[in-house]
Image (cartoon, rainbow, N blue to C red; front, side, top):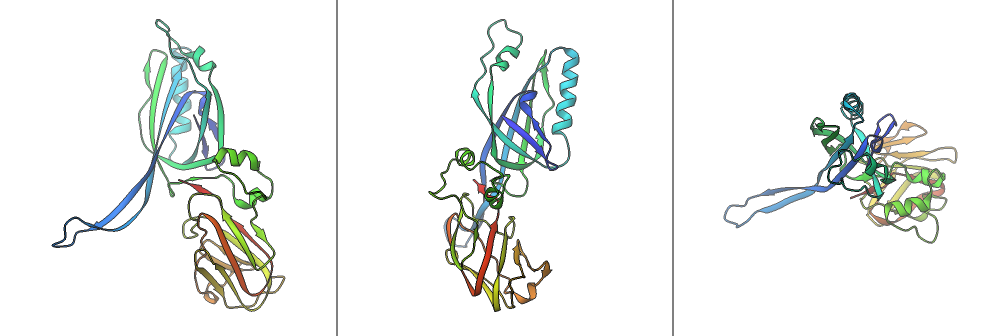
Length: 298
């Protein structure tokens, strides 16, 4: 039940090689604490998400002895690289049958398996441990352990702006991620000074360590202020903006027409909490503003 995708975009469907069973564990919670002399127990100073562990068990069936070596080499080529990659789940919509007494091969049972790719959420992982294929005759089993690389969350392979460009099927995405759109299609571009942006994911978008790009066009005589009224975040640029200019907040970078303007800002960041985020832009008139970010899930 797994598809691997290299950082270069090449995908490997592991169901082509056998039955992959992917186990995705909950995210670890990291606790820091301190002991206070004379006080029972301990004082928690902070808690935050750590890594997530994933385990892939791959059951394979060779045709003959030579095929065992071929399968071993093919899987090594896919799984034993030194770079991180993305992993997707697949859903088994028609399961395989159990091996009958005296049966020496489960090839026929595998033919009955039907898979539904779940391509709307992926995890960026790196291998931390693995076993060689354990062959028993022509049947083999390999267990590989992964940890999430960078963020521990599942993420969409698309961004909000790619949704608006109709590069993905909205109804399929809503079904695949287990939530419903509002009555209207999602909006991430606006042409007014007051509007609402909805983060459909389960995790706050934080530009310190997540891709998040805001692009603003408009007419502003002396300053631009972008305020997320929901979170209290306020960004301010102390400079002019004409209708031919574009102000961009890209992660922790601040750009006007591609040039750094960090020194003219208050160096604050805009985040997006889960759900609705109400914005207000002051200092002038907005021509257009867009919000581009992926969605993250616990």
